[in-house]
Image (cartoon, rainbow, N blue to C red; front, side, top):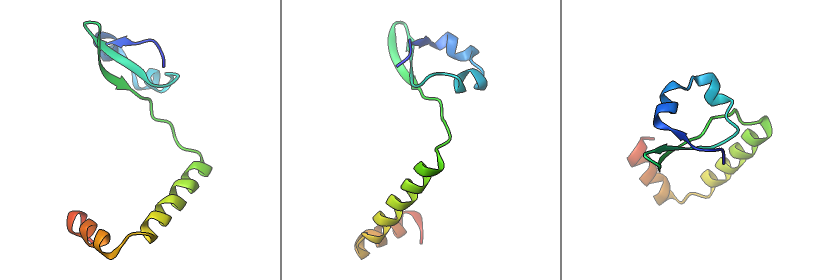
Amino acid sequence: MAHAITMRELQKLSAASIERLPGAVPVQSDGRTVALLVPLRPASEAARARFRAALAQAQAQRSPEEQAALDREFGP
């Protein structure tokens, strides 16, 4: 993890500078970590394919009761 940044420094960061961060960075206020700034990066096509396959497998393994609960919560 990179060196921590302060809340004041966070206010001054642009989107471009956040994208250039090497990874997750703790955000501190008064010496105490209050947040974690994680730059988002696009997933590779291979990673997206693995995610789609895992999602399809999980959907196929749902019981009718689980599907009904999901439909009630989120709609069909």
